[in-house]
Image (cartoon, rainbow, N blue to C red; front, side, top):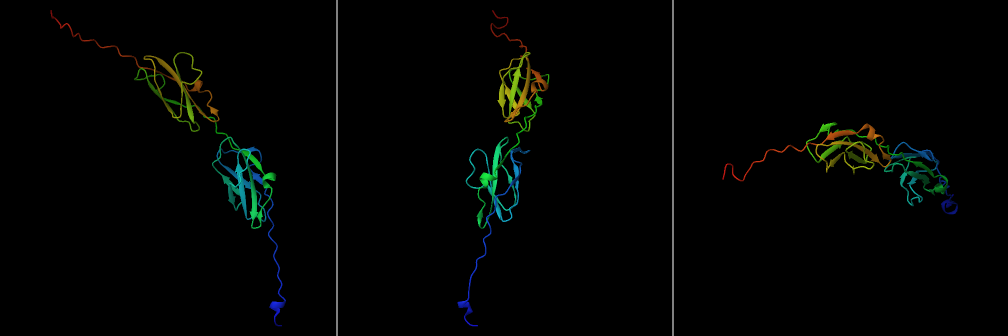
Length: 231
C-alpha cells in the first residue's frame, strides 16, 4: 500500500505518572523526646511513585516556605539542632508530575531534642586543700574542667557560713581572688552550671580550704640621725 504514512497515521499519549501521596513519618515517634541534643535522624515510609522527598523541619509556629533539604532516600540526618527544643517536621514526596499535596496539614509530627545534662561538681586543684599559700591578699583558684559546664559559680569565704550568692562567675576553670586578709583561713568551692541548671551538692562534697600567708615580722631598722656617738 502506498501513502499510509500520510493517510493512516494516528497518535496516543502515555498516562502521566501519578502525583505521589503523602508519606507517613516513622521516626522519631510523634511527640517523643529523642536521645540526642543537636542531631536527629528522620525516617518515613517509602512512597511508590516518589523520586525524591522535600524535608521541612522547624521550631516555632511558622513552617519554612522552602524545604530544609531534598533527599532521594527515606531518611534525613538533621544537624545543628538546639537541645531541649520542640521541632516540627514533615516530608513532601515528589516526582516529575509534581509534589504531594497537603502533607503539611496531614502528616506533620513533632519531637523534642534531649536536654544537656546538668554538670557534675568540679574538683578543686589549687590551692591544695588545707595548704598555706605564698601570698597574703590574693589567691589563684583552679579546678578541673567539667565537660557540660558553660560557666562556674565561685564561692569563697571565711568563718562558718558560706555565702548565699556566688562571689563570682567565670567561664574558665580559674579565678583570681583579691582583697583577701593575711593569715586567714578561707573556704571555697565552685558550682559548674549550664542551660539545664547547676551542679548539686558541691558545697558539701567539694569544699576545700587554704590559708593566706602571714605578713612577715619586720626586720630591725637602722638608726640614721643623730650619727652614732655624735655630740
